Image (tube, rainbow, N blue to C red; front, top):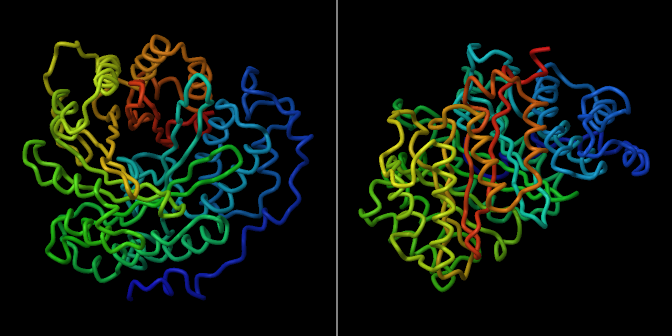
Amino acid sequence: MSCSLSLWCGSRWRRKPAKAAEQAPPSPKSLSSTKSPSSSRSPSSGGDTSILELATANLPPQNTHSQFWWTAAGRTLALMLHYAGYCPVAQYQHLLYFANSIAPFLGPARKDEKESVQWLSFMTDDGTPIELSWDWGNKRKSPAIRFSIEPVGLDAGTQLDLYNREVGGKFHCTLKETLPNADYEWCDHFIKRFCADEDLEKISAKRKTATQIFYAFDLNGNDIIPKVYFFPGIRAETLGQTTLESISEAVRSAPHCAPDNLEAFSVLEKFFTDSSAGPLELEMLAADLIRPVDSRLKIYFRSRNTRFSSVANIMSLNNAIASESFAKGLQNLRKLWDLVFDRKESDDEPLENTLHRTAGILYYAQFRLGDELPSIKIYLPVRHYAACDGKVVRGLKEFLVESRADDHVMNYEAFLESAFSRSALEEDRGVHTYLGCSINSDGSLKLISYINPQPWKLNTFQQ
């Protein structure tokens, strides 16, 4: 099979828009009567009809697998939207979108961690194909909720669909039909570059995953902003290239890209080939599905060096980024590092040694066309190095209360307690996958908590 877009979104993949979108939703007046996050009542509690119950009542028939993901990840998403303070209409719209356009593409139901899985999604370490996130905003801006997925077919990983190819075109068409105002120009270009079937047939047996693409969705008020993520390593392996060479060819040949507006990318190419940062493993190339002139290009990479001195060096692009506010930002990052990893400020010892595929520190470098310098974001891998999820929450809470008197912490704690069992939070780790941190222009940190809605840790399946 070729990788032409006609096969990704051709006639055999066409489907009608989700039926629920054709139904008249409850009126805004009826939705606005539901409880606000300040109430002790959660979206799944008794009493007044909740947004989650209203959305469930308006869904078309679902198969067993879609129903499972709606019950597990859908309910967790509902709790996040509620406690983040989304208005009832936005909650309802986002939940219907998730139920109709996302849940059917998350693969087979899986209630038990020990249950064998046909397709081990690279989205999370345990193969759960969805990750939720809570963007903390700031004193003037409420939290924002997002989620990322790997579309997974029901037969993915079996002889019927060894490399999870059957679902790709179906989901891509659903995305274009349900979010027609997004811009797919760069997405289509990179699909042609990185999603060829013949690449999968040639990959090494040593490669532990054949994941080629993720999608993500920022829920901004009533709007949904999609993003797309590609894994260039498979293409690079097929052609005998480095991953950087594969990314460079794709970026420099992308629509609207030219030498005079890729200065920031040239800085990154030099950085990735400079040995002073140590070995860096390039993982993903991502883009926002908005106009290319406004979109970010993001390159995700991993360093196995877990000393904070290495973190400071990489965040500064080998000292290419330097200012008083940046230095303040590194100080704030060090405070958070010490709190969640239980370290001392003078300690530059590496974090505990682990050989896991996703161990080490994950970063991304982002830029827009015309930027002179990229910026760096770090993902603190708390799923590997924090003592437990409770420690993550307490460290994050102390940092937020001290740094900005944050008033969203109580709602975040209420969300976690409503969604996950106490034992999952206090006796284990893995609910939090990462804490994403980038340095703002004033030296404060932009923070995002990433959540794995592991079904076996949810209260839903333990009642």
